[in-house]
Image (cartoon, rainbow, N blue to C red):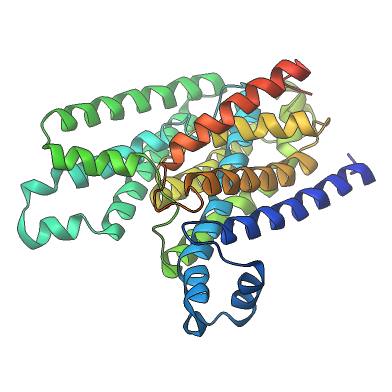
Length: 343
């Protein structure tokens, strides 16, 4: 499938729109920063040159980069799952990765009081929560991969993933029932999701994992195009279904798992961005859809973050609430206008 000039122009337009939204996100907040100061801070990269430089480089830029990674990663992993399972309701967390991460975090936050003292405070550190979330996602991934080796039916894997999610959610409910109000509040705050808590060191680690997941997603473009017409057709083209399915699942796990570990469970984006992109681009070619989904997800996440930080106010809304409240009505409106979900 060749990429036409019109699609190339659309990708270029999305890139310029991403840059514009990124600058707007850096500019707006409790303190408005002039665009000139933003470009000066980004070119000098010296936080000691003034207050605005410090705010941009130490707070807003890391948060904006996190938003770009989260939006593009969830969009791409949602697209992978929807194509693999041929289900428009499939999302990046359909394999139970988010529930596994939530269980890991719940065991740390809700169980930290059992240890007390220094060990208890150590378990509540940011890195401990990130590691616990990663381990929870990884264990669920291993279980799903083991099931994918034994079970050849793709829909059966989807159901198994949903069952893992139910089991982990049940364990979290039991832990919550026996936890104190303070522990529950801390866990609930984590479940709201957050883009503004990452240091530059954490962003580097996040970016490395994200890059591996993105590379696997790009390598899966040809199998994804073949799977659109069914597994039998893909086999006739020489596609190894089992290995392709394994790569797609691992790519999704790396993207969605790392996002949940570093930013918490972010709702709506992974499910809706692929649909929004398909409404904008009238094609089924993943060579076009994958980059378009990356840019669309990043743009939408930056817009939601800009709204969540309530410009000119000291208050910040939970990012999960904004992604759902702003995004869901937009998708409903677009679907009612076009009345067509898939190309």
